[in-house]
Image 1 (spheres, rainbow, N blue to C red):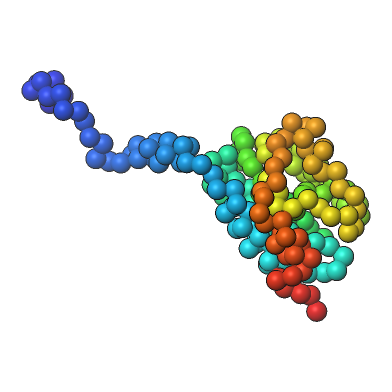
Image 2 (cartoon, rainbow, N blue to C red):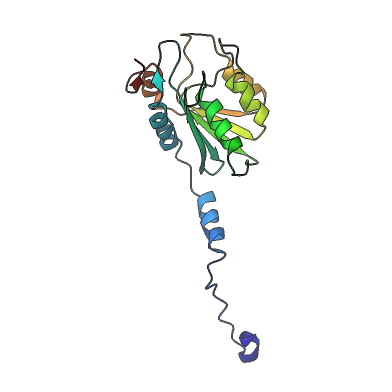
Length: 184
């Protein structure tokens, strides 16, 4: 009103900062995502897994498409023979946070396509979500326990799949119990 009365064209300043999130979100959208750092974070989470000789130790992170972390999980974090991706999805779905329209999973190892236990595979869980659009992995699953076709199934379903290069040896070492906790 004062601008009109006094013909002031200097503009209005938002002293309430109620729109400051718009500038922050715009800046984040233009910031490249550091996939290697997010995978290193997933590795740190994987190290919380208690090693058993019959299963890998894996860490997983679910993020928004801009890289904000929504949920994390690691192998055997929850009761039963739970996998990292399974735990991260379960925690996100049971939280009070809204499920995103689009999300990304960072996992230290290729998501399982088959489980010897007969439980639902992580690939099945990812496909059921409908909101996971890309999967970044630290290492492809070796044939220690099963032949995994997770990558092929995810790509066939239109989900992006990318290896984050440079952490393969470390991801495999942690998966096989090197540098984590050991069950006695």
